[in-house]
Length: 238
Image 1 (tube, helix red, strand yellow):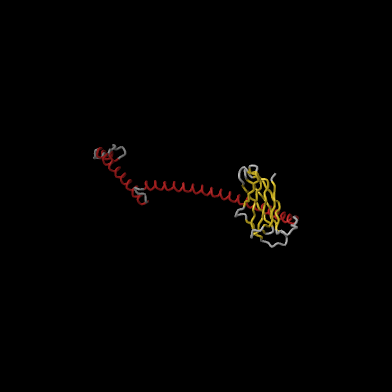
Image 2 (image 1 turned 90 degrees about the vertical axis):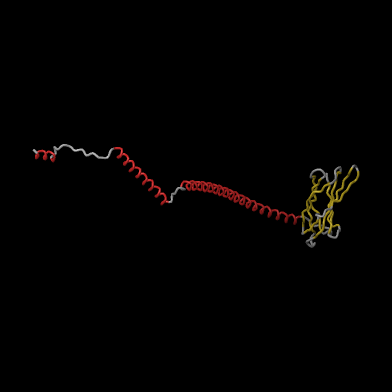
């Protein structure tokens, strides 16, 4: 009988045995909670320790904000630098265009100047020399109204052949007309009306006269450095 019972317990057909813990379930839950809390604490400590090792301390957020602000500032400065560079490039292009246009204009003026020089030389050869003993002559004296009580004059002084170059002196303008039905005249002599002739000299300017005066003619007088009258020419107003 005992042998049969022993065989039943050791064989496959032996009854199932359930092993139960002697700890009650509240204690088991407490142990589980402590284990989970310990694991969480270890994980947090590991995370913080890793941040400290990597250089990400508690001020990492503030440093990150500062870095973002610095990045924005650098981007703005870059945009301003790009704008300034574009503006400078535009100015440089405009300057080059203006220089090219100016160079082209200078070439045109050089050609025109050369043509005028040739024309003046031709006219000088075609103009007859004075037949008298005067050292110079007045050519092309012209008068033109230039507003109320204003006259613009133009004249060309030419030295006679054989005269030494560098004749110096001055010129006066004598206005002749009438004022209130009476004869009127005025001599205009200014300090800046000096001349230094080297073969020829072109003169032009403006002269004024009082209101109520009617000018009929203007006499152009050229005087030497000693005050001696060298030549005089008269032009009438029509």
